[in-house]
Image (cartoon, rainbow over all chains, first blue to last red; front, top):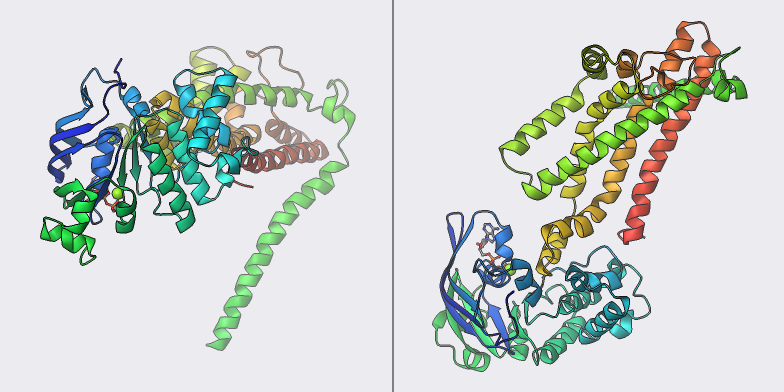
Length: 256
Length: 275
Ligand SMILES: Nc1ncnc2c1ncn2[C@@H]1O[C@H](COP(=O)(O)OP(=O)(O)OP(=O)(O)O)[C@@H](O)[C@H]1O
Ligand SMILES: [Mg+2]
């Protein structure tokens, strides 16, 4: 069994990733501190999602995807043979760009992960469901319709449901791939507040195309360009005095 | 030009009219000829004094049971393997694709001949319900594989990703997420396949014989089906009985088609995909 109780900082060294012949990530080195929000920014196709998906090994599902380098969460080696991929994914949750609620009731959506890991007792599940929905600040909106299909919710509600669904697995790290790009400003605001709250216990890595969002929520920001990590540091530094001309041009909206 | 256009329009209208008349004529003729002849004796009689389709009912139920018990699990499992374990790509998938498409297009009498040579002759079972049922299973297998594949492929990729990302295994993802989402389409396909079993005749002439006057004792007995009864009655001078049997068969097939679309909708509703 891998132990996810230690420090949850992420350390990536000499990461290279190929889709077939295509070199999608080039020599990435990055240290992501625990219990902070780290934003990945950069123009479309630069490899942000690809990088994110390394951390919960979703790229394993992609044929012809070759990855080299060293990847650690605390002292767990992500790609070690001993590392159980399902346990890894339980502890490294992921929220996708497009809300993807399962076609089942709200309750069953949230209970999916705990049931996966063997929790059957009704009272225990009830508690996890309520807790997770509360943490995702959607409990009040859905508490009277837990048995209703999750597909009947609004887009913003669905996305918070998906966050709650991830939280129900009790992850230590939460990866979010443009979680608010399909949402209206009010839902976006709610999810941003949520991240503020969640980072007390969780390490959050978020991909965003929205510069204001990065400055609002991220402690650190990494700028990717064409598969390379151009610049990485405290968000305030990156946005007030970017060290690289390309970073400056991107964040001031002059390309990308 | 104008004249040409209006002439074209008239030709199309006439064609449509002929189509409609053909459709209505068949159904109306069968109903008019057959409904009057529907009687208790025909439906449930013991075939002592007058013809009865009770043996055909029993035969049909047994054939449907055998064919679906064999073809549904094998077909659905094959489709799951192709879509979920090979990503629906690769040489094996290509070969199976071509094979299922070819098999689906083969006239049913060819399946019948196969069943005859294997079960009736080689196995020495003679004409039997079981031989016919297995042959029908082979006949509907390709369609079940194909339509299950389609249903599985139409499940959004985001759902699978979402399940894996929560730490669910492949098996759990397939059984808890993918299959329930695809079940509407799969069940519809199964019911339509059952419709083919119910209305098939060519295969059965060569495999279960055409013993119209005895309820089959067991699965190794020869038997009959509704479609065979129609053929038998018509060619032995019982024209009204043939029409009446057609009415029954027609009702069955229409019922199965309604059931197919109804169940698809119902399952979508229960998962919330449709309101
Ligand atoms: N499964 C795949 N097979 C082959 N190439 C891929 C695959 N997934 C992504 N790529 C390629 O890798 C590069 C990086 O893709 P990625 O999705 O990581 O970009 P991104 O930075 O997330 O972009 P966006 O902001 O548009 O989401 C792109 O050029 C993309 O075409
Ligand atoms: Mg992306």
